[in-house]
Image (cartoon, rainbow, N blue to C red):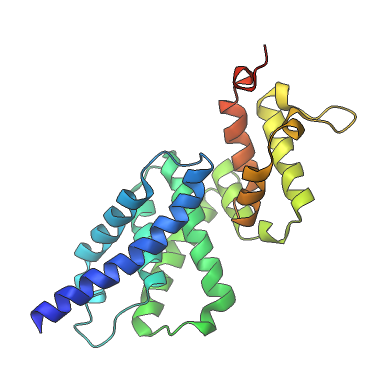
Length: 218
């Protein structure tokens, strides 16, 4: 029985880690996250699991869904980060995606009472941090996270360009509606749009890192 439980634990950890890794890779691929998604995913899952193994190892007859484990892993990490840590925004965006999925499609998942406990805990952390930074850039970006999915591509790219222009005048849109961004390959941005990345934070990050010399310009 002990060996079987150990194998099952490893499998369930791996399942949840894949969820975490996938969410982090979305941000990593577009330059919003400067950490190894796979390594970080395993660290987050192992940390939350070792802290409360009784919630995850099925000793009371129920094991939580991988989404619930991923959610509470992000929540645990967020609660231990400083307010200005760059990872706070990244983890909040990832947790927000999970909570949004649960809110919209929760009835389609086989959640049990353990899931409800974990998801309630994760939602509490998400709501607390969102409220605490309601008027800050972090709070505004997190709030956009759950609503910007309704944006069209045109609205999304407009917000991206406006924010980039605020932080780098060289990227500002002129009176004719043209921005230097319009000359760049937009496929990475379209992928970010499809992946649900918040446009303002992405635009600001790009503006602060933008180097015109890399475009062959002087």
